[in-house]
Image 1 (cartoon, rainbow, N blue to C red):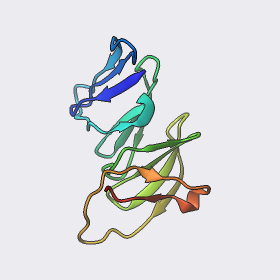
Image 2: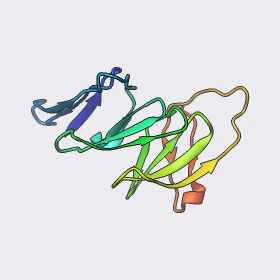
Image 3: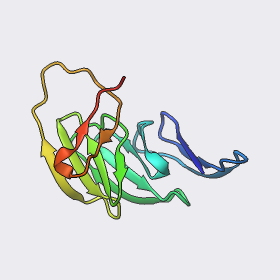
Length: 134
């Protein structure tokens, strides 16, 4: 199965062999979605919000309100979703329900270059970091 998201947040699941559409999930009528997408078809996010979708059906599983815009594609690692936001926070949410498990806050420099690379998770959560795009 392949997953693709448009800039308006519409997400489609396609069969890899045939390209046949399995499901389509659109943004709600009262919000604008970002085109960024949790890998393997598990979610999408907008400014300050992360939405998890069921990979088999496209149904919304949960929604989490964040304190800032998501800077890059969230990382799905085991039972955690790790996400970095523009306000300098790196946080882990539960894949099951979107509840925050832990958060790390760092100072945000006055001038930063925005990257689009996802967080990288090493053996321990305290080693989590984001790498610059190349």
